[in-house]
Image 1 (tube, rainbow, N blue to C red):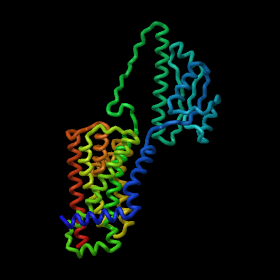
Image 2 (cartoon, rainbow, N blue to C red):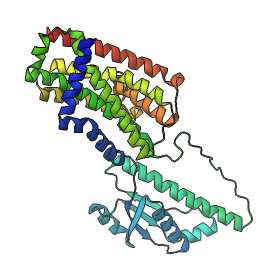
Image 3 (tube, rainbow, N blue to C red):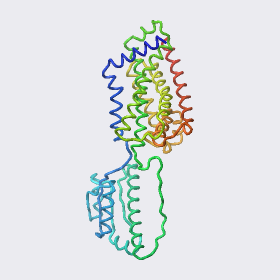
Image 4 (cartoon, one colour):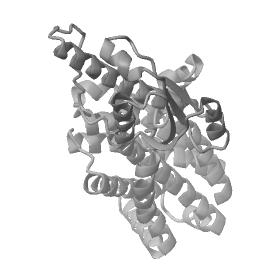
Length: 372
C-alpha cells in the first residue's frame, strides 16, 4: 500500500506544481460550464419579423402586439407590399413574415374563421420548426380568445376543448435545467479521460516511466497510483461544477446527492479505463489527445447530450447502446431534474458497472503488457 500512496503523492505534487495543469483541471471546466450553459440551447428567441398588415384594425394591431410581447418575435419592419417580403428574406433582414389580410377584424366579429399567413425562412430547419410552433400557438390562442369574447357578447356559451396542461419535473420548461446537468456529465468525461491518458504518455515521453519500471513498485501499484489521483480530481471537479450549477444557474438538484456521487464513481471506471487505453496505444501526447477526442466526439454525439437519440437512424440508436456516456447522461439528468432514486436507475447503474469494469480491466491488462 505504501508504494501506491507514494505514487499518489507524486502525482498530486506533479499536478499542483504545474500552474497550467491546475488551470486546466479546475478553472477550464468552470469557464466551459459558464459559457456552455448560456450557449448550448435550442430555444429560438428574438426572430427578426416583418409584418404586412392589410387590415389596420384594433384586432390586427393587438395581434401584432401579442407577437411582439411574446419575446420570440421582434417586429422590426412593416411592409404593405407583399411582393417585397422576399427582399427582407434575401437580404437577411427578417426570418419571419406575417401577412394579415384585410377584413381580419370584421371576420372575427362576424364569427368567421380568419386566416393569417406566416412565412418562414427554412434554411435552419430546426429553428424554423420551433418558430412555427411558437407562431401557431400564439395565433391559435389569440383567435380563440377573440371567439370567446364574441360568444360572451352574444350570450352564447362556447363549447371548446380546453387542454389542461400539467408539466412535471420542469414546470417552467427551462432548457437550461436540461442542458447544464448534461454539461456537467460531459466535462467529467472530457477531463478525466484526457488527464489520465496524457499523464501516462507524458511519463513515456520524458523517460520517467522506464525509471519507475526499475523500481520495486509492481505494475498494478503503478496503475493504482496513476489513476486514483485523477479519480479524486474528477470527483472534485464534479463537486465544483455542481456548486456552480446551483449557485450561478440556480439549477435544482431534486435527487439524492449521495446517489449521484455513487454513479460518478461508477462512471469514473469507464473514463479512467479510456485514458489507460489511450495511453497504452499512444507514444506521444499529441497522439493521445487526438485519439481521446476521436472517442469523445463519438460518445458525445450518441449520448443524447445535444440531439435526441430517438431522432437518429435506427442503426445509430443500436450503436449508442455501446456508449456508457448515454447511460450516465440519463442518470445525471434524472437525479437533477426528476429526483430519481436507485429503484428507477439501478439498470443504468448495472450497465455502467459492467462497462466500467470491462474497459478498466482490458485497458489495464493492455497497459501492463506494454510496460513489460
